[in-house]
Image (cartoon, rainbow, N blue to C red):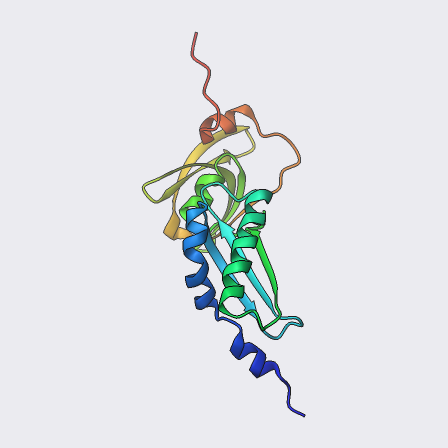
Length: 182
């Protein structure tokens, strides 16, 4: 007896079809579709939609987007059972778009540069396609700003921190005002 997997997968929408169907609704809510995964081999089949925006979606937004996506997908064909998952980017998702770098401002980020160099620093401003990264100079407790062009970054991931950063790091990253000189 042949498997019904090809039949089921043929009736599920493709990644591109899901994107085309949901993009307008997500945009009206203020979000972009970061990624879509259609897994017809799962039992039941799964459609995973990752939403993102200048501000990441909160739980209420995710619930609203899930409801809208479900209605739109069911309107196309409600005869194929599937599990729909709408979520936001994970905390450890790589930074890949300029909005990700902007949102990471003030956070500790580990970079892998295209030349193989590894760099860890506090994300500062994003200006003209370059990230201002606050880096520790030696072991002296002094910091400097290193400009890293986005095209020179092979991978960047926000790091979880368990202790508070220094005030000077945050000042250089532009997340708090420098105190006025007396």
